Every structure is written in C-alpha cells, then in structure tokens.
Length: 298
Image 1 (cartoon, rainbow, N blue to C red):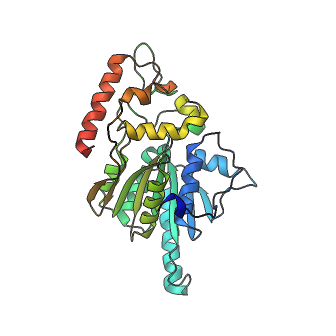
Image 2 (image 1 turned 60 degrees about the horizontal axis):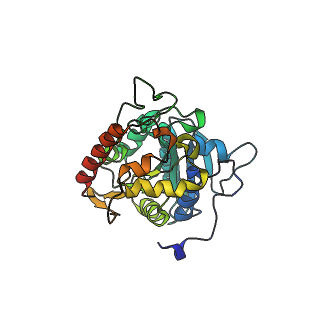
Image 3 (image 1 turned 90 degrees about the horizontal axis):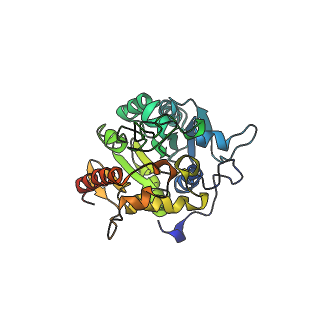
C-alpha cells in the first residue's frame, strides 16, 4: 500500500478531543483506513476511549464498544464468536469478512489487560489486537506502565537523587505474543504510515489472532513540542529504539533498516522525560539498544 493508494474514506472523524499532536488519534485513523468499514471495535479504557467519545458524541464511524481497562481482548473474542455464530446459524454476512479489532493502550495491554489478551491469543480467536504504546498511563497522570522504557521519568518513577527514573526494562510484548504461537505479530510506528497500514491490512486477512504494537509518541507525557510527534517516531526507528518487524507464522522479518543508525542521544535529548540523564546514563542505554539491534540484525 503506497500513499497514492490510501483510502479516501474517513472512518475516524475529526473533531475529537485529543491533544494537539496526539499519536493515538493517528493510530485509530490509519488503522480504520486499512481495515475498512466492515469492522467492529472493542476499545479499552484509556486515552483513545476518553478523547473520542465524550457523551453524546463519538469519533467512530464503525460499530464501537467501550470496555474496561482489563477486558478489551475478552470482549473482542466474544464479538468474534458472535459473528461466527451468526454466520453459521443465521447465514448472516455471507462470505463477507468482518474484522474484529481491539484497541488497548500499553497499560491496558501489558499490565491490566494482559490476562485477557493472553487467553484470547491462546484460544485462537480470529481478531486483531492493536496495542497503541505511549509508554505510560497518560490519561491518568503519566504513571509508569510495564511498557515504560528504562530510565524514563514518570510520576511514579520520578528521577531524583537516588533513582534514574524507571528502573526496569520495557516489557517485550511482541516476543511474548510470538511465544503464544499466533500467526501474525508486528511492530509499527505512526511515523511510517504505509508500513503500519500494510500490517493492519495483513493482520485483518490472517485467519486467527494477530497482534500489532504501534509506537505513538505522546507530547504531554514525553515532553516535546506537539508539532514534533512524527519526528519523534522517526527518531525512535532511526536510532534503533523501535525496530520495525513482523513475525509471520514464526518467521521473523525486519521491515526497515536505517542506512546508518543515529546515536540514541538524538532521541533522548529532545524529551523532558529524559532530561535528567547524564552522559554515563546515555552510554548505558546506548549499549542496551546496540545489543538489541544486534539480536535483530539491525
């Protein structure tokens, strides 16, 4: 899918209440463009739900249900089962494919919703789970999540004289999902829209569960000017912080390789959540990223 092939139809309406430069809004817009109108969405509590559905308004132009933080995957699996039963018993939808997509933030996916997600993947439901990852609980005050990166400062992992921000590594959700043996796992970035939309389309065509973790920079939680959201996503990929890859039926494939990886400092220095770092801290993070890139052949 190239830029000239982007569908013109907008299934995610403008006029929502997201922050200027909000990456989550871009995730929803691009995902629905790729999936098309035959889509049912289950949306966990979080930024995306809060900003898109202030009663009685909604930005969603497809069937949409708000569910609790912890059960987007469980509700999506129920919807998928209902669609399958209606096809089998009532002959509804015919041969038409109905996409069932669950959206969850990193907190609703890697932490609170992990049990429901693991169960849905293990049972093999024909659904797509999209984890929009802004690396903390942004809509409730920037608390750390299992997806918060090492040494990032949040309100519950504040950098100070004794700690250097988050003291645990970011949870590796793509590899955890791959360990479930599901047919499709991918990482994506809103700054590479063609790649993201291609992966959503492929995930919808898969017969079985699919998982996509998409990085979406957050201007308020990360602390950068709103107009730089896309640039932040590019820097994450160009420095090797966020490799773009797919795991399709167990086969790993790297989707993008920078001609020359940029130093991690270029990514860290433009975010307030890392402003406490000293050169020795940056050196530690650089070594960690280098090791990870070596594993991926990046």
